[in-house]
Image (cartoon, rainbow, N blue to C red; front, side):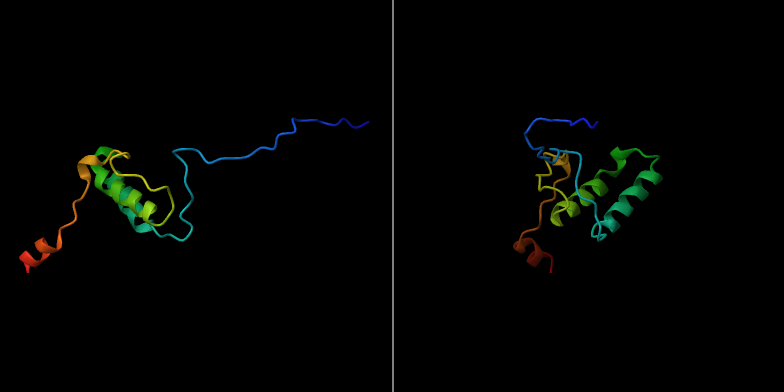
Length: 95
């Protein structure tokens, strides 16, 4: 005799977590940034506070390649490392 398992009729709808999980980099678009970050960690006894610039660059690469949601760097804890891009006038002055 078989028993039927009757679950609720609502269909399960998976949803992505808010933070902490993102697609794998199958094409290696950010592999160089990841390798630089991992080398920095190894060289600094895995003290991630010494590798914040490399971490920021890696996360920026992931955002640029749609491997994670775009977030302002300030929300990711990099407000003090936010780059200001030079204005065209600054470039002309250097040349």
